[in-house]
Length: 374
Ligand SMILES: Nc1ncnc2c1ncn2[C@@H]1O[C@H](COP(=O)(O)OP(=O)(O)OP(=O)(O)O)[C@@H](O)[C@H]1O
Image (spheres, helix red, strand yellow):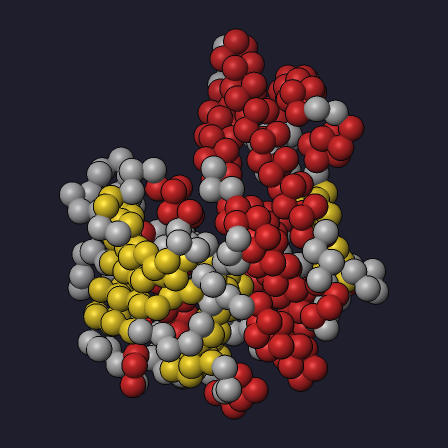
């Protein structure tokens, strides 16, 4: 079972020093606004590649007045317990001031993606309550986070694609741009775009194939990627799609120059979601129905990862009960109990989590086991 048996924070957000030994795989963190509930989840999210639950810059995380931060954890994995830690690198690199360093069992991890072999975590935050009102970017990031938990190399594909796209857009803006250089950038963009979209398509297929989703009594989602590249991948091999994309980008140069952006690429894709049972599109659903669908995806994702890696990711659910009715709350508690993975949930009202009393540890920042300086 993926979960924490110890968490130590040093100068992380509002925590100067915290040493906590969770007593149960499921933890309910309650307390007043601003007490540091989300900060705890964010600290755990730093143990996986990416910018964590708030998408923060690494140099925003030190406690006010401090310059560095660190998160260390003992995690229960398939091969036993591992000591993981992550901290902001000292001797700031002026080119990459945000670098952080991972250690596993006291050894520096040279390949940072390898941290995923030891620990995986997926989160849902209140900001995602607007996922279906906001633009496609937030939905893409949500999907990419699910992909990353299985394919840590996905972040590199996206970064390489975006770098090539920025260079192409800059070059297009110049008068008499070097067309050989443009063609090379378009080829690079196409290679990374096809790889990234294929990984998204693969994750969606896995989530849609989760036939246990309906058993939870919790709404199950049917997902679809609205993306030209994904549609091409349906009928042709990846290399042929790369060639197709290169040709489309070359044709679109004049219009892209006018628009100041790229019409084709991995950034042009949107995640559509509907209730599997009723077929109702998430965009036409109420806020609570959307929240339930998102939680359903997170549960399916945990089962999918458990099937692929032998271990479900840890679930970090920030205010998961907001907008859910009582029946859905009960179904969620039941599903989390059956999941058998580490879960951290937050909320302001302890009573709302009462059904979890028998199986979860209840904590409050600044008190008991979570006393600052503990
Ligand atoms: N770098 C930092 N140094 C010190 N304190 C910080 C830092 N960043 C954030 N904080 C403090 O952390 C607190 C917010 O913590 P957090 O977001 O975890 O609250 P929360 O308990 O989840 O609240 P809510 O119920 O409102 O969501 C605020 O009081 C904020 O001032």
